[in-house]
Amino acid sequence: MIKRATVTLIVFGIVITGLAGLQVFRRVTDSRDLRVERVPTPVVARLPEQGSIEDTLIYPGNLLPERTITIISRVAGRVEDLFVNEGDRIESNQVLLSIEKDVVRLQKDQARAVYTAADARYRQSKRGVRQNELTNARALVEQAEKDVEIAYTNYDRAKRLLEAGSLSRVQYEEAESRYRNARTQLENAGRSVQMMEEGATEEEIEMARANADAMWAQYELAQLQFENSEVEAPLSGIVAKVMIQEGNMVGTSTPLIVIVQDDPMYAEVPVPEKYYGRILETEDTIEARIYPAAYPDRKPFYGTVTNIAPVIDSRSRTFTLEVAVGNPELLLRPGMYVNVEIIINRSDNVLLVPESSIVFRDDQQVVFVLQEGESLHAEKKPVLLGIRKNGLAEVKSGIRSTDQVIIKGNAFLEDGQKVDLFTEL
Image 1 (cartoon, rainbow, N blue to C red):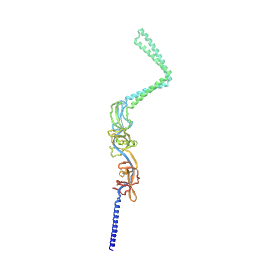
Image 2: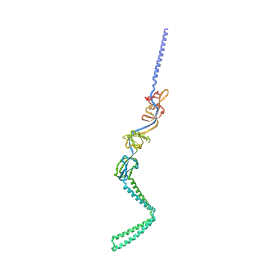
Image 3: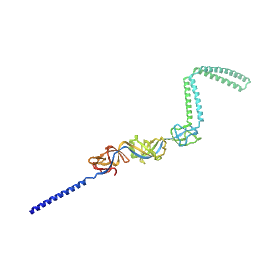
Image 4: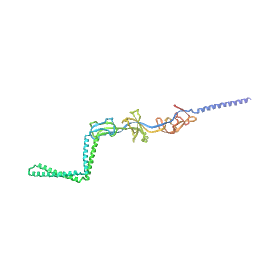
């Protein structure tokens, strides 16, 4: 009996010990399960922005005018009137000064008179002689014949008197000269009648026409010289410098006035060599914003790249961009210091996320977005990025506008990991 009782107690002890051990094992296992289960990671998330983003460069430069022109006179003379001062705004064809006109006016009037006479001779030779003109010419011949008869009679008498010693040698020579002149007048009158009766030849008409044309060209030249005595502005702009005064004598090579054309203006900007390829690829579409130091509180001026230097400066390792900027309000001045923001690329109406939301997983650029299931968790989304600027990145593909993108707390996230959403960390 004692043995059986002893055995029963031993068995009972073993059973009790086993049950206790089972309870301890269960407790240890439960505690291990609790330690393995992760606590949700706190994160901050928000929807992507819909907007525009630009890839820009900003560098300093200086403003230059479109053109600088030095005015000279086309005629020499004394400056009679000066109508502008330095700093004046002028328009194209505005009279700047005048040179004395008396001499060129006389030259013009004389050339006009010579042309009028030459043109009359040409028209007369082309038209032919009128009957009354021929009648008058024949009458002149008859009169010349009578004059010859009278002159010859006087000459013959003087000759006899000279031989008789009753007339001086001087008086005889005068009678002889009058006789010869009368004969010359008769010959000329006869030739005139002959020419009138025969009319002008084609060669004579052509010569008369050419002579009239030459006289007209001389008149036009004199007229141009007269007009050039008033010096006009060839373009609109501003008077940068006046180099003469009223009363000065000037020649055709004397600098008179310097004019600066200031609309548009041009900014010359040195840009580092490493951007040459990128800018060259998009030169037809590059826009720019210009910020003059003289107007720090004003909105920027807008311009476009008009020229890219074909060479690189080997000393500074830069190349020069030329940016045209409109100046309708005439606020910009040559020599102004400006900062030029060059817009290399621009994307409009795209999804934008903070750069902090982009991480690398398995050599891929990804973002994590919130997903709801049995619990709130993070889902990994590979993305294709575009322009990155000022803390924002353009997402070309990979997410939708309705995705809640995790922007904080994503440094060690893994795909499917549970998260807790906070408004701020």
